[in-house]
Length: 305
Image (cartoon, rainbow, N blue to C red; front, side, top):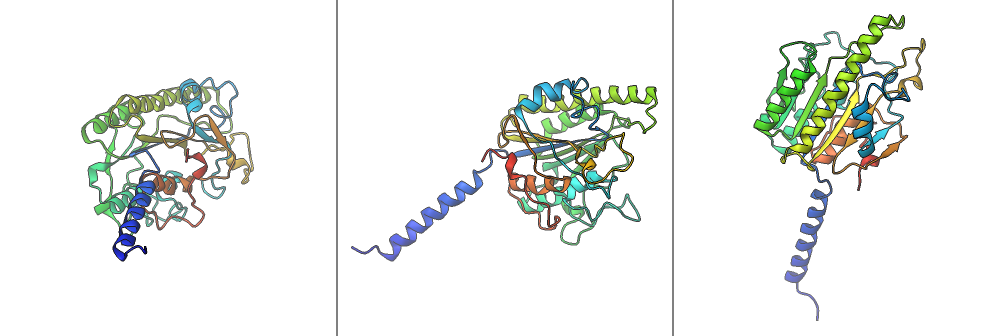
């Protein structure tokens, strides 16, 4: 007995529905939180065998995380790499007017337009007041109508205040996409003045506590626990002792990810860069990122599936 056209159409419909369910169920996270540690250098963190300045991150987070020990920057750029994380592109890093809104769409715009989300659904906060232009771009297909909710700390570089504001916003508005730039660490130059080095190390210790507090809050809130993928990375991690820093030297960036979609206690040596964060988040939350750089691929090796 031959199947009727109606039966064939029904079978095809069931197949498509099952296939679609599989695609959308591929990632468990409904939220992504990205934290960028400004001046969180490699030397006193991942590069220090004792990890004495990052006890919370190293002992409580890394064992449950995926990390990349060869996370590269770009030797030509050391400024505004925070923007690279948000746009997935190097095109806006060097500009005549550094604090103009970027030309490349940000992750907030991709997220809101791609998923039809409102402004409360994505949140950008920083304690570095000079980063007041990263919430949306001048791109003709996106722009301010798809920007993030933005907040700054009253006191510049106060990450404890940032934590309080971030938690208050997350409790009230339950955003699905959160980006925080921590600014409390003040770096030192190559002369290594003892007072500056000591101040820097204290700053790293404080940032370590804030990063862990943010992750702990996620684990305690029923709206975010087991539903959130978390990324922590730095802006640049070049070795302070290197006079001439080539591409190999610039591999000392830091990236760590935790969450229901992320492998635990896993380390990879692929050559990932900051441009890979934006499309990776797009993959998790299922929104397109059409204008990222051509080499901005998804960090699939971090994923459980």
